[in-house]
Length: 571
Image (cartoon, rainbow, N blue to C red):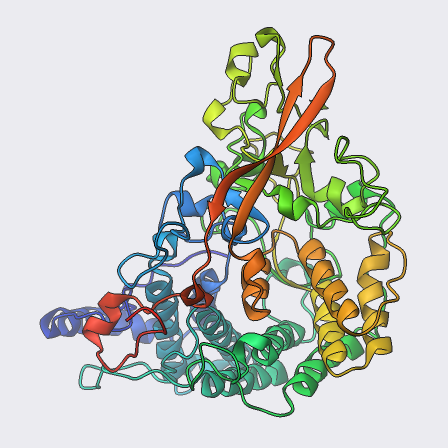
């Protein structure tokens, strides 16, 4: 979908940015005719909607920062770390975030509210437009897409910040910009209302050329995740931080989360997920549209930085010896979460630390590159040898033995991300059908299982947990109670790996052990005979600060709107 630059949408900066009256008035006068022309034509109105789709997430965490276009939330989660020079791009080490510096999260607040402002302006104008008179059914559908996109933006804002100002109308020159934050619960209620209204209008499905546009199921999927998060421990009034900006007090919260997921389950008839026979089949699920995908960003010429191949997974995640950048190094801590092929854990007798890559579950081979993995025509080789001429191509000395890559990109942990790698095309070639998946059916089944387990309905929870686990060729999970809840958490970590969930999941579960920890890696060495051994070591220590359950409100926003209260522990 083409990213259109419409001049009349002159508010392209922060929610509370100061712009001179003269500049605003001049822009309005110059572009009044252009605005009237746009809203007279349903085709032009549709192009405004296409532009707003760039508010959804993509392969990069932050489109406005060069580095952050090339990695995502995995580097700040239990899953992985930022690899190049061990840089702390997210500023989660040392003293952590503060209102003046939150690393590559900067501008998220500004950019989300920029899109909200544009959508608010659209919704304020479209009802009385000539385009609505020309084709009301079509334009009402476009209006529902915009409401969906705005709801999705607010859902992201409250995941990062807790309660935020909810603006249903675009602010004018005479309006008060000093707007306080709504409570977290008020935000959730508003988002639910918007999603329900959008779902009632959006189509149940789209033809193939419209892949990536919202459907009623997409709106309900956003609602499912929203209510699951709201029901979680982080938002219980008994936990810290507490208060209206963070708490969700509804007694029916787990039933509401369950019901939201069950609506989607009923829409698909509770069917099984797409079956796979091996790790390659599983890997291919993430490389092209399929019926398990509920909402995704399509890849193509107009997809953000779509022609910038070194912002896409093939280049950014491949090991260094292939010419890749390997920006996200999966932690050994996370790699140990993958089960054995027989369903036992790596803490059991079937796991051999000397041969950690043997007999693992299917998703281990689909999601990770590791020592010896068969990747793009040769085994991945991170090992350093007693013979310098035999060092691995992907090792810190790879260039000395013929690697064309940058040794500074050699993985510090002994792992790289394989999920999303399209090995049918070259490292710097486009993969035209690969989507960026935002919501999919496996997540809905896990949402439902978690809510059911929290209500004590273990049998129902196991049915949908096993639909996900069995698809990955794992045996039935038969546990109950707290053990079942932990099994659901582990399944979310593995099934939804590197998809932007774990950063928030560990926070909403309030699991500091997976938020601040010694990041472990494996160092591989070869003896003169080529025999391999590994040593587990601490790559870097990631501390934990309780303030990091939420990002701070950027100080520049508080300076412009003092009614905004700062988040706990950032004062």
